[in-house]
Length: 276
Image (tube, rainbow, N blue to C red; front, top):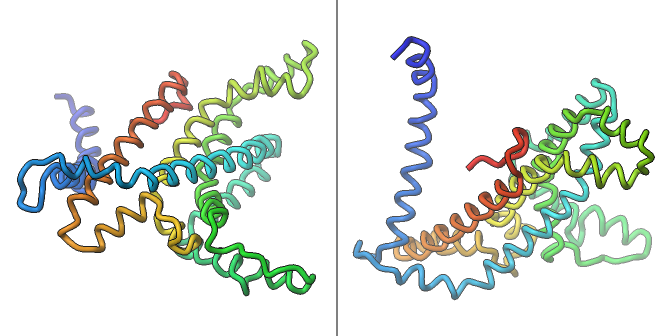
């Protein structure tokens, strides 16, 4: 083994140890609890119980899909607009997108409670106009709004990364060939930005489908998402660790399937694939 190869392995060793302790070991524990009963005997009963929670799975997928679609619609023009600015303006907008991510996730979610509550900022303003108060908090819309707000940077950043590297001469060539704005988008911009879209969709959908804190604070625990269900069983104590682990295992498999599909859709583009 040459010195360079040894040096690379030495540099990577902390990450390998970290991955083994905080990723591989928890996964092994989860699989073990999923496939055993309270006495440690092998069983598939936990997996067979998953059908009881198909509503939670369905609602979680529906909410995550809605949040992902909304973030894509909002983030795509934002990312494209950023690429049209000069370098200093791009850096400023990039910083604005990043600033919310520096704040604690709990604080960001709590801030929406003060905005959407019956006595919050929006309803206070509407009351002065003689409208409301409207029921904004503890609704499905509030949960999806929280997902969009918390995860939209994960859609903007990969889109911006891909769009900023596009060859502008391709758009100019399309104009020279008589393409209108829609044709340029459909035939040039959209296909070339597809890798960023695939990455962004995955980065938003995966945390959205497994979230639980947003739904608890903005949904008022009226709708149990799959993340809420998992947390509920874990909070009940060791007796329910097996079923909670089984639900987590099924959710992980669903996420891996989504990642596989995203990778297949993303093709082999260097900037686009989602790592598995």
